[in-house]
Image (tube, rainbow, N blue to C red; front, side, top):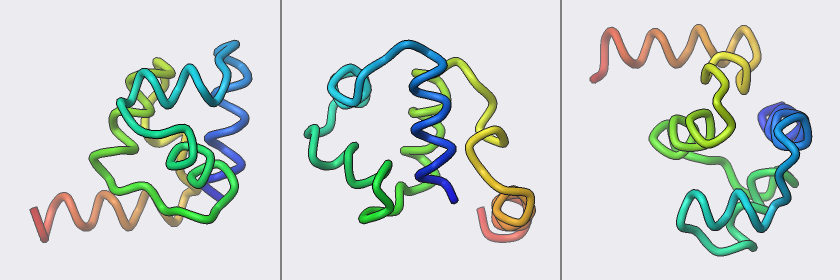
Length: 77
């Protein structure tokens, strides 16, 4: 799940949820929702999160989610 991967990457980056919320310019509750699975971040938000954590976006997605993202980028954007 994206939420688990977000938490794992954030912890590896020695950042708190509050740090991430500030870096993204969102409320703490919004970022917390991403990590708890209550909210699903948009592609643009995932790109910002990946940038803030200095990881490729593919690291935050499962293989099937990465394939869907690639498909959308090629055919829908």
